[in-house]
Length: 271
Image 1 (tube, rainbow, N blue to C red):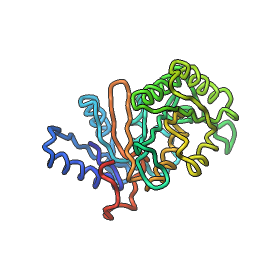
Image 2: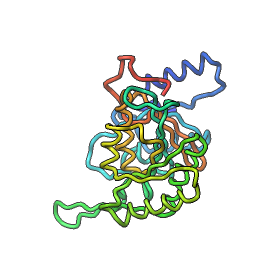
Image 3: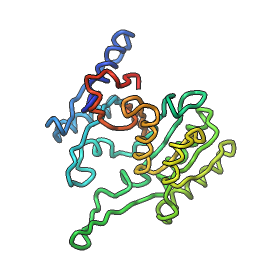
């Protein structure tokens, strides 16, 4: 368990109280890792990683990263996550976004190294000009596409929508889209369509009922996660789940510290 920053410690306290009341046979190995509270170090990060490898399940709050001009993987949050984790965020029943079972799903994964910009390859090609690589791989694009269709099949969902920017990034996002189309052919009972990220954001606000499962590269998922959370009440009310081949991580879906909720009793501990 990593309480994290913002409202995270309050939510984790609620979880422990519920587990205690229900006599759930779980022992939490609690670690405090925070950059804003000066409670982060290489040693603590190694301890957290070792604990996660042993338990294979983690419950975490958002580890807030100060806004500094560093490489993306310099943050402890990103380094903790960098390991091939697939992420699914579920939307809860709420005002403005409803379906019969009260949930929608969004699967996303950086289809190459974590995030859209390769954090290890910044290049200053000229004074005042920074270039970053966006790397998309066939293997990981196929992996997240299969995860989305498997999820739709298991949960009785009828449609998967691939969100992309292939109209501009024709090669990178084009490969991601091609992989989704290839995987879709293996699931004839699941309807498949595509949507450009710009339009997807607008459609989520105007007509979210049209969507079921969304699959997209990581950067777009960061945007859609928070937009969808806003439709149902904000960062503290939506759950998030992350999966790799071996590990499972559960957290707040919007991955936002939601510091404005501290002490106000408005965050949703069941998320």
